[in-house]
Length: 189
Image (cartoon, rainbow, N blue to C red; front, side, top):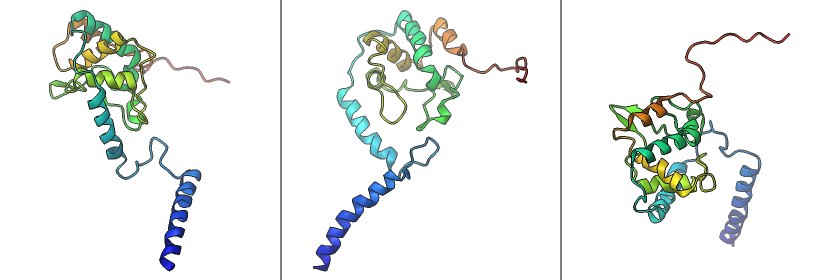
C-alpha cells in the first residue's frame, strides 16, 4: 500500500514540479545561459538522422564561375550577417546560442566551414533551417536554384575560387564598424 501511494505521489509530484520549474522561468532560455545537460547531444542525433534521410544526394547545378558568383552575392545578402565573410567574422555570431559557425574563417591555409559537408546537406539546412539555433528556413526567401548556388559555393569553400568571388567575399558589409575611428558625433544638449 505504501509503495502504491508513493508511486502515485511520484507520478503526480514530478509533473507538477516540472510545470513549476518551467512556469517560474528557470529553464535556460537566454543566449548566455548554460545549456541543459546533454542538450546538444539530444538535438544533434535526430537532426543528423533526418538530414541524412532527406538531403538530396546530388546537386542539379555545377560549381561554374557564374553559379559561384551568384552564390557569393546571395551569401553576402542572406548569410554573412551571422556566418561572416572571408577573414571577417560576424559581429553577431559570438552572441548567439549556439554560436553561428564562421563559414569563411581561414584556418591553417584552408577555409573552415561546410566544405566537407555534401552540397545536399547544406542545401537541406538552407531550405529547412534548424530549430532553436537561429538558422532560419530560406524556403520562402530563395528559390531552389539560389539555395543550390549558395550550397555549391559553400561546398567549394576549400577550393580555389575565382577572383571575382573572393573579392566579393572579402568586402566588408555595410553595417560593419569602421576599422579606424570616424569623426565624433556631438552630444545632444
